[in-house]
Length: 318
Length: 188
Image 1: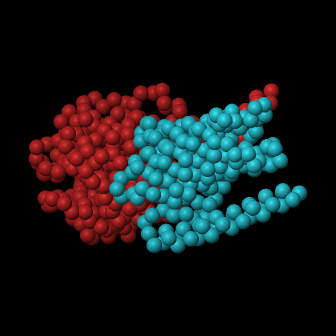
Image 2: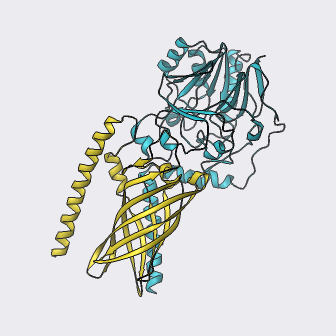
Image 3: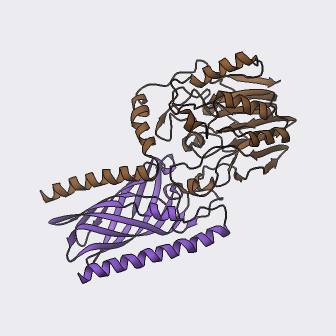
């Protein structure tokens, strides 16, 4: 009896303290969302991608972009292959369920030169996904990320401060400031100490690509990027949107994404960071995409804003 | 009464000691701008206790447990992250493969002998099992507990999950036949 009572107290106290610690760490709402949104989606299979490109790497191409889903884009400039924020796993961080399959199989990427990590959130730094990729690549990540990057056996790892440039073999990759938020596990070292998020400018063979990662709108930052680089293609996030007052501090909505596109003076915009996971309180997976489509039609810029389907590859410069 | 006063005094000295340690570590952290460091927020997080259920046959005791990691050696991270960590440990540095020396103090809700307090030191290895240990990791090690003036050595085994925050460990003292189950919340 004594054992039983103590065991029940043990379980009860554990649950109380566990929940208190979630509240203290700011994970409580996250946990509630996990229970409500993600749990109900766990049994459902993700939407399928009808035709996955089996060989997405060209022998040589001017500039091509393949949207794998979320913020994952396979970019090829000439003979160099870049992959942004790779996520191929069924969930983001055990919690958020993937709602559509990745646009390609990771095994189809047989050559990879650079992996760009914009920040350390689960949907952008996925350990399971990095394990699936060719280890020939160099990983670039924002300053302060090394504490969150286990060794995967990649050829090199570099932390980048804003406005610093990595150069190798004719490739220039510059970390550029964006507006987002820190942390991976809620209240952790990254949250406490410094800004572990960035965007990147890739320059190679006269082509320039801007990968904005995950960002809110900050006119000064993006206008400065626009002044410093002649951007051919900008990969800009458009979601989540709701709750708008909260999200707009750290996530650009479609209207703001188009403003970023204008500020950086890019020729082409490709929207990213939508459709793939349940994000925020957006009413549907295509909520942001539908808003963007309406705005693009109103402004008659359909030829400059290319909304790719998951798995779609576009050769922009042959 | 005397015991109570001594306990409070010990607690106060420990708190002052911790505050000094925080400020000392902060000064070091300023020299290495990009590294995470101990802060007052860190101190607050250390105040979140773990819970233990200890079985001293024929009695059982429930306790709250506070842990700190004076030193941890991590072998699972890249060359950019130094292997040795003092007090401030990010979750991956622990769960991606590490061995740590940690100390803890326990408060037993019912007295063990004449005291409510226990102290322990643990040498614990963390071995990654799933997703580099972020989803599931294995804990193995040894511990020495001093509870109410009685010291015992324990074998420790268990697992961690939920991004290294939640640890469940079973501790067994072969000499004294004491079993201990503990759920620990590890922040740093």
